[in-house]
Image (cartoon, rainbow, N blue to C red):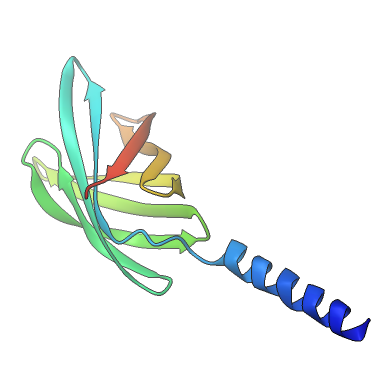
Length: 127
């Protein structure tokens, strides 16, 4: 009986550990956004070292690489910020989402002309 209880305990702890483990998000992710009658492709290149994330965002009018900031991965929840500069002004977009395999579904939030704007995004990991 003690062995059965011990086996069940180990199994439960093992499942809990797997459930709490962070997703593997390393790789290149792409999505398309539409606004103002224009469609743009965005790319996120992520590097992961355990629970530490870094990477670059490629997109916007200039389609240049911009380092991401404040990247966090907590289980399947991901968040990061991208700050870009245009015409001498800085613009920060906050991204948050949930990772499920090769898909991130989330929301981006930014302020433009004193107005808060948000949009949904769905990124797919490139093979």
